[in-house]
Image (tube, rainbow, N blue to C red):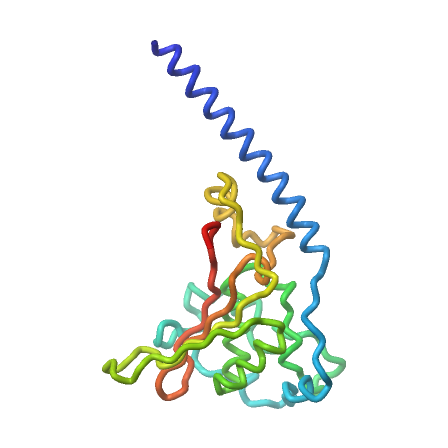
Length: 230
């Protein structure tokens, strides 16, 4: 009886390993193909592009507002964003290179392909939202990035609400993960691995969400992720 149970267990584990290995190879090949397709954001007119130019001397470049998380200030040395801040110490590191140090920067030229994890995306989007100041301008930025816009306002009858408005830019390229063993149990273990060539937030996440407090200040930024069920 014990030998029979060991045999059944061995067969089950062997099958699980084979399925996992197959899913790893299939997902890797599929992701590399998607990554190399290099989907570009939709074209926008020159006037709109120009509206997102900022001078190289913009005060927020060297002196951004304190990073906010869930309505509370967080030091850039906090373990949550320390590594992301070392890679992207200011908004210029998040944007495409310019010819000279005094060349204006365009906030639309985000280095999407350079992000390796959600924290890096969160930090760079925070920089941009901080410069744009209002949620209405961030809506324009999301739209120019080819993202669908979802916004809702919390009633002031709550005393007081942590946030008064939440804005989400959803990636049209998002592909929900499959409900396979690999996608549910293996892939999440390596979601922040910097060596993954297939990590693309615009395909792997639903979108980016920004919450605003009643006074219009940013309460927090986060990357919103889905599951194989949505």
